[in-house]
Image 1 (cartoon, one colour):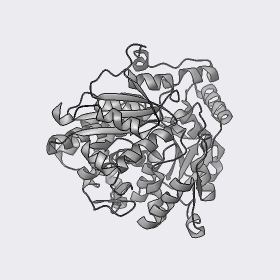
Image 2: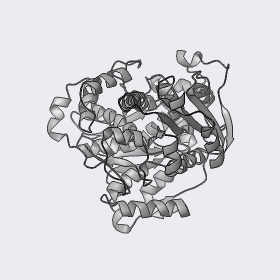
Image 3: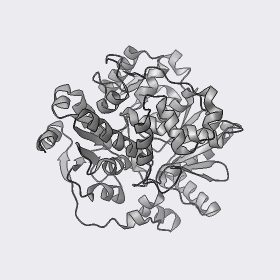
Length: 461
């Protein structure tokens, strides 16, 4: 399997090169040159447990062999749920719980895998890696816990000051590991993400400091998430296809579902659920991708106005025309707005339906589900469930599967306000307001460069 850039000006590379490269040198995102189709193998895959299923799917993308199987088992050994994900039934839909990893968020599924793959690749090549990432909430802690204290790598994680939950921040800054650096940025998540992408585009700096990506621009994250969509489709869609309903911020998670659908798993459509930061819902409704002002909400991981992974979807929408992708993204970055052509817009909703859920709808959904079943949804998962209820009639006979992306105990203040209870989890109870390892910086490229340059070379450490 070879990997190419969405902007087609990067030489094809293998799986290992794609993982270590992160963002393509031409500024695009990496994708497989061809998507494997598994339609004829569905009956055989249906009998596998999650880890066996994961091993089979990843092998189709160039990650195969005894080492691959061992790394997959190591990556998920720390999960509380034997099958990594767990399904719950609500009155009108299924929930797929994705939060049984070390930091209680769906990001653990991809990042525990990525941390082990990084370590394996660096040991083989003798290389080192300075991992650079930005987080709107859960990516940061999941990435830090995936690579803390590992050899040959260091992580720099940016997050918007005062714009992640108290517990999300504590999960990052309380990690006592010499290879972890948390950066509180005076700005929005989009500012953090722009700093990271700009620095990756500086190829001289990237090479000099061995930068690697841990955000969902990294192909391995997309691939690891694709697995649970296929697994859900085979376990819950045996008589019908499924419709995953995905609370969405940076488009990485839902793109993984789109990839699973292209592979031939029984997924008839995807529902993209946003909060008030509805740039993606508006795009799928109108064909206009227009940046707005970030609104800070009770679902902070979704407070995004520039979704990195949309570019991967556009690559397929534009019939794998890298030049068209480049023009569209250039227009968006320069003007804050880019539009589809009429013929492109005609096919926009074939695969994905966008739905906007506001604060009141989210609150009402948490209350209703709790009153009906006693189940507690976190604010992000509730947005997906609210979207499924809002457009349920459109789904026909397909089985809606709402992605539960975070444990409710990560948002105790919000949920106490809504249902009068304080959800808890032992891992979060153990977080005390003790030592904090964090550096505050302005949202300026020079400040970020200076911080990274202030560390000794990993090869000298």
